[in-house]
Length: 382
Image (cartoon, rainbow, N blue to C red):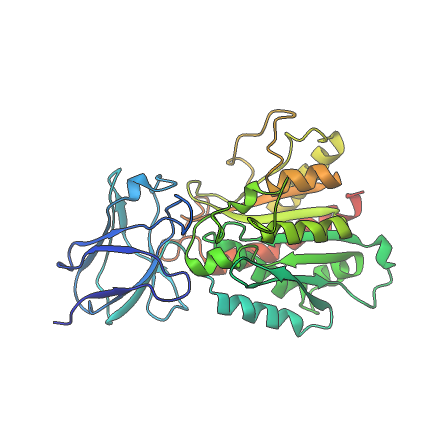
């Protein structure tokens, strides 16, 4: 019988091995982010278990950052391309996942990973279009590039000063990998020259897209923070190059371009739904923004049954919004339609998928569908 081993020495790898003595009781602990106490993300490779009934036991799941693991199922892959869900149980403290591997190499993760190599490939795909310019905004604390995609039709009949400025950012929380899958689907459709919605939008708008706001945290295997331990989605009022250069650099560019519509893609650990969170608690929130929000949501529900507006976060009371969050800061600063998009780590309970749950591919299709909602409101943003 092969000796069991677990490795994490790869992009976003993270787990602590407690015991590999028994394949029926592999004991693990979820590791915290490198400079904070958030512990939720895991990604590792198990070798030597072909044909053996394996039970992975995450001993500290009940003490994780978001300990509601009910209805969650671990994802696994043999080739790192095709990910599937495996049976998972949670007793309030220990999460157990079971599988009998068909080969000696099997990967496990909290959600379908989105590697830094794929991120670079996505930039390369976009740069191949004559509608895209890649702008280097600066460096992260670990020295990685902060890249911005500027996308528009240079032959548009609309004068550039009149084109609406639409921003999409993703992965402020690096373990929320569905957010970059969302961006991939968004870009593939936006750059499809045969798609009439995309053609109209590129005539009317200039898109600014940051596919990965937190490349350091992504590579390090963090759930929510960057290399310095900063939760980027709490840094928008006073970012610094020393603690949160990612936000500082993007924020400076936003101030230079202006914003008419803003979307920030995330994943939610607990809720098994896709939903949006707005900035109704901002001091500057108005009836105009309320009408725009409703029109956007109505259009997205028509475009994608994966979107719903029944389940979500409790709305902030008027004037009580936390302006350190990206959506709130942008909405207040630019008096614009601003939304945080949330997707599940679990599944969409309205349209469940027994084999895959919510996945990278479904996130891509969801990202493509949001173009319909943008088109529905873009002429009314000002």
